[in-house]
Length: 227
Image 1 (spheres, rainbow, N blue to C red):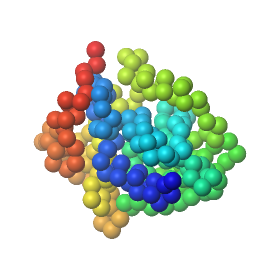
Image 2 (cartoon, helix red, strand yellow):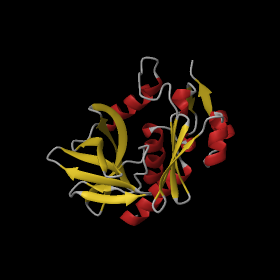
Image 3 (tube, rainbow, N blue to C red):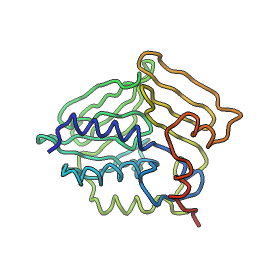
């Protein structure tokens, strides 16, 4: 059985190899393989299947962003404690949050804090002293079949999600976390702090090929156009 440190190493590996991105929505495509990352649903399902193969007790859970039930994550039980793994977040949430106590850590210069309430857990992100609520996780677990149904519907034409006409791409690259927001690249690092770089003059795939570890050709081959 894997311990907490081993699972968190696996989570870090996922943030390095399986990026968060909005390419499926932006390019109007859907995945054939989960190996190329995506938004929360794609990343969560990729790690979920891997943990099941390793014999880890894991289940899907839903959560709220901006008071809307729209975000998927994982609940992982280790040593009798349920941990929240927010693997599908666009931020480097590389450690798990215990559901029995408040928890704080920092990664790549970004702070993460959780607070326990009677019926939910709130997770905050902190940058340059500014703290913002990122996700609100109910303690009551939603039926996995219903979560899977919601995931399957994410590419429906009536889905007005936040990534339809905007580019997001986040990945751990070496000792930095790189986050692309349209034509601006944000580089987060523990020692150097935040660097902001304009990507004007480069195409989307030129940016990805130059700054990220991602097979754009394989991505196109392993996805299909939405009808």
